[in-house]
Image (tube, rainbow, N blue to C red; front, side, top):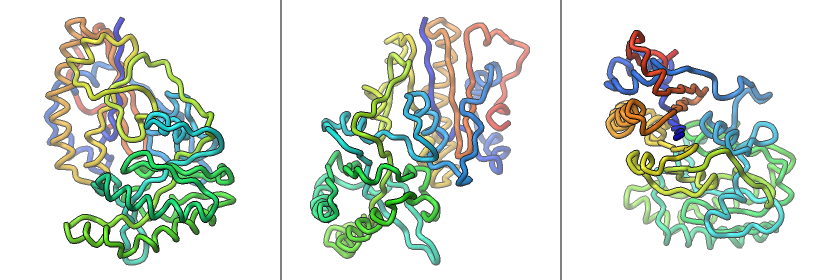
Length: 346
């Protein structure tokens, strides 16, 4: 039996725009799938004491699925697993992900810009890392280079910090999203040191001359002990990118390749809606949804009808929740249920 879960970050439109987006969305295959599916809540309806979650719903869903739920309200503890995926061995201690970022100075607050917008090349990243590493060493911390957008720091005494994922904080006043805990001031000290050394650096001046945002800060998250491991019931994972590479071996794959592999229990991440949603570009979000309809939803519907796939589960999210739509060949026979996108907005 072939089963496939597809995680769709931000496939659920925001409530205030749902009616207008539904009118503009042309997705008959998706409408058939969600209308004839059985639905359910894919995350517990908990409310942290802080009043907000430090990870987006799809990130929390992944952490739950891969048994990497943090203790308390914090980001998924994936730093050691991501280090291993990038070819490094964390050894001992507690490790965090450190990402070079741009923080926009607004009139009366600071806003984290989506790190995807940095477009930081390897050469510039290495040069900025070489500036930052000795500053971390001055505070007794080891900085490790993973790739241009992903660095790591060993900070055993920071293990109690509650941190936020960059996607959860993107576009917001960073104040409430900053690390909180007994050693938060220690983090801010080294962060400020790096910011001062990067300010007006030749690399950033050259970036601004090319119309790019300067790299002016660092974002800390994903802390976990070096021996932390991840596990799940999935036999195959597809299209994991960014930090989700920590969750399993993967390669970019289109649906025909996935179906040909006959996954016993597969998971595919389709994150093309994430960036337009984080930037509130709903025209681009519609374009991405129409692409998904053509390349994924319509072929998935045919795969179910034709028996190439036995069971499909669409896990759709927005910035507040997760909805799961489970579809089988049998449920598609509910001919009396008319196709409708309404379940995405209810």
